[in-house]
Length: 258
Image (cartoon, rainbow, N blue to C red; front, side):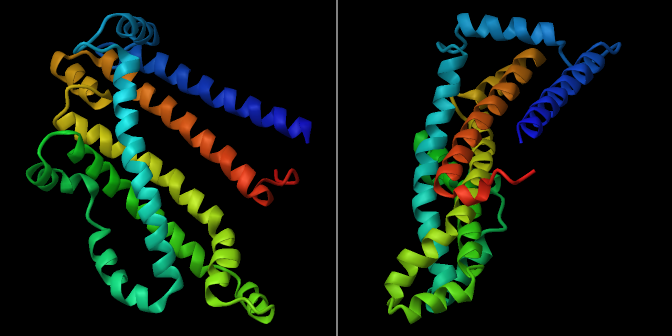
């Protein structure tokens, strides 16, 4: 198993190495609009020290991250509740399912003009946009997880005398945790996409704001730095969620897995 672990680490390092090599090759082409790794590193060090719009890069990342986490919290709470209701209760599904199915195909970005008209250009509008983008994957995964529960587990609970509430709390919900966490990880990526889109339209701080600033000034190195920052932060958050999944659902990460 240790050999497999080291092989997986080596493969991860190789994939990053291939990415860097391709980056160097593309940026070295004549007339290329792709900044070199050296120019990107120089820009990163510059905005770490010199503020843009009265904020360095960590402050801009924190501004975006706050928006994501605040909206994400409400999306998780309400999304899990709605997903459980839709997946568990036929009556609840009949009441809310059609409305959800009608609204969920609408891209979160399509809501931006309406949200700005309703809530203005302040923080609330950005939270709502991120909430919409994060909410749908959580509901879908949670409801699918509830519906995928082995009927034998429910039957066993009934045989042991569990009522409907106990079946939901003690049998169905624990069995659905892997699906819920998978939905949360998907929703996190969607949330970042939405907050960047919202900040690119109207914001005074944030990663999306920096991307627009880079576009307006033709500073491709700044754009790439922000893109990489989004990727790194998303990776760290996803890793934290994966560790949580390993603690809450250890059977999903058996050492016998290859």
